[in-house]
Amino acid sequence: ALIISDECINCDVCEPECPNGAISQGEDIYVINPSLCTECVGHHDKPQCMEVCPVDCISKDPIHAEDQAALYQKYLQLIG
Ligand code: SF4
Ligand code: SF4
View 1 (cartoon, rainbow, N blue to C red):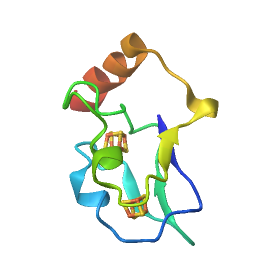
View 2: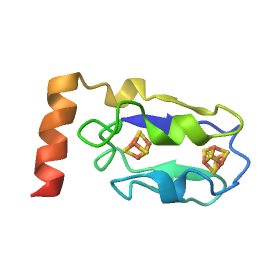
View 3: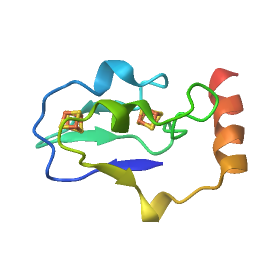
């Protein structure tokens, strides 16, 4: 999964781009629900939130590190 850093400026550009509805407005900054983030695997070639974020504050979450196979399995589970 990916994670949003505290450099987030709350611009709301990323939220509508997420194919999994994983992004929401948190208490201070936008947040990614790691159980819903497939790093866009199954939907797009590149993480869409990273593509659109104007301040590049989204990166891989080391606490929720997953390989391509695990991300694809998550995608399959999410689409049911
Ligand atoms: Fe959503 Fe993709 Fe960003 Fe994960 S990488 S939060 S699935 S847009
Ligand atoms: Fe924050 Fe970047 Fe999303 Fe804007 S696009 S809300 S700066 S994470």
